Length: 439
Image (cartoon, rainbow, N blue to C red; front, side, top):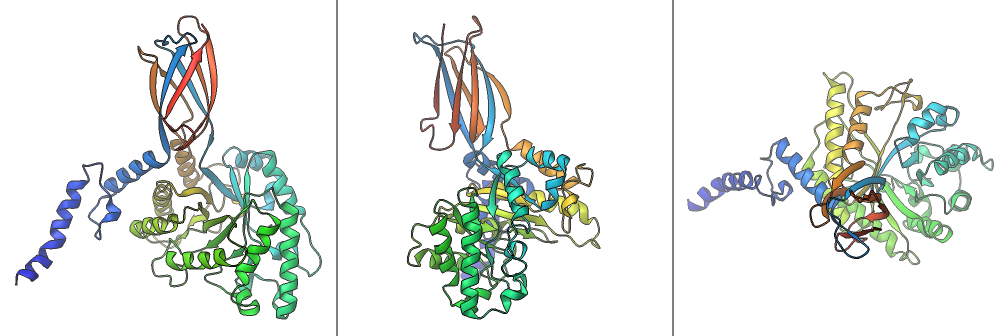
């Protein structure tokens, strides 16, 4: 009887403990097996994790050359770069639209191409390669400091392979796939941040069925030999989106990655975790998203959300409003996990065709989705701030990690000094910045 009473009371006790924790900095809603938290409590937790993982608190100490502290020194702090990449899907339609180029380059530091680097685009007909579109798109990206992921070299889904590819014998397929790898990787080696080597190789197995169980590992090896400094990604859907997908949960993702890494010659491959992040018309299971990211982050490898969108049923009441709500929830949850290094929104303006969601219409006027993303971009950067040193020439500021230019001005003589800083967990170990002013 006592056992039954304990079993009955245990959830109630845990709920009370969790609610008691929300007023404490140690609150961790993921640590519970239940969901007693409110959205406000979860948002507070996300903010706590952002402050811990994305920001650094610096102490500036300003002095003259002789060591005297500069009382009331003025600091003008400007963020130049961010350690986090906002990205967007890009198509060839951008090439002939100057306004869209400007819109894109003013917002994003990373890109995936929707189709233009895929095999079916560059070699639709066997033996006839055409790289005109990706050449021009990569040139545009280079000119504007936008890093590009090579999406994708090969694709394990049979329906996304050309008819001529599907008709090849295993021997012919291996020869053709090797030529494809050599062609595209040699053409762009050293210019791309990384490559999706074998897209969606957990849900699909076109190459494994024809070339053997080590097909993905072999192609990772071949790409690495050509472009050894590139990050080579697995890229998969439903690893964080759906708890009931049996093909690509984190445990299977990590198992396949370990298999690729342990293949002879692959120990030095720089791996990355690509999560497509196609969410649907249901509330997001934050527990599952966070636990999935936690599991994947144990590898220490960079995690990129590579094709982020939220698809809604247009017949659903208030579907457009819910789309904004769900998108904001997944953006905040993902950004609050410091292992996530970049998020790529899958479609920018309607110029690119918006089958799921768009940030801007044909006139590049923001949609509610665009307003949300622009707002979060602004929220998650330091921008420009002004501060003043105290009586001891000391000043504390909390800034998002990235590159900075700091101007320090003597309030009496107006003499100044400038310093450039890289702010992250390792670049300034003691979080102290000493600046001297001539005077």
